[in-house]
Image (cartoon, rainbow, N blue to C red):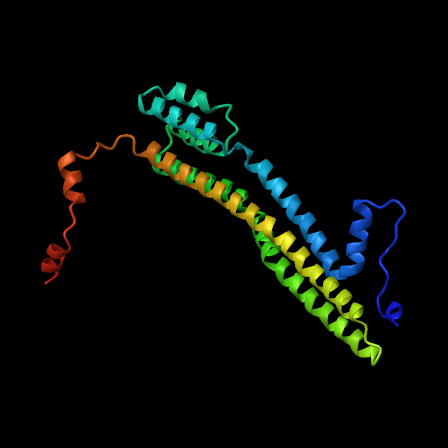
Length: 245
């Protein structure tokens, strides 16, 4: 009776990882096949984004800071030449802004165009993260769904066995059902880690770009006096309450 209810695993002559994968696909069914396809897609996205964001390094930020220091010292040509052949996204944004200012374009127009260029680069860096987020969120749910379907099938087979109940029928069905949950978690955990790593790199790029653009377009502002800075730093809630009365 047991041999009629439980399909035997695939036997392969070669063995090895391929045999294990085929056995997993047979035991887990279409849910495991879908999860494996999602893992392949997630791996492709992570590799593509890592290659795209390879220019976000500390060397890019250091080069940009050095170029801004030279620019603020009045050596605009030298500052631009340092960034001309840079491939990092931050250096490309600042080089475009410097090029526009050296050509005598209106400062407001250059600032708007620089912000647009930076926004396009950041949006390009963020592309592909949403599918990875969907995979990270959906994989555990698909695994749980496969487990529920497997448990239903296991108890259905147990019911069909009638009086000739064999514990192996139930135990075999349970481990096959739990396999989908394990595969779902195995897909989701690396996806979440990779997603957070990529988002952190993009956040650092965004902060560095904002800081560099502000520094470039506010180079002529006088520094705040110490007295004014200390006065701004003093905050007395009681005084604010009295003023509000």
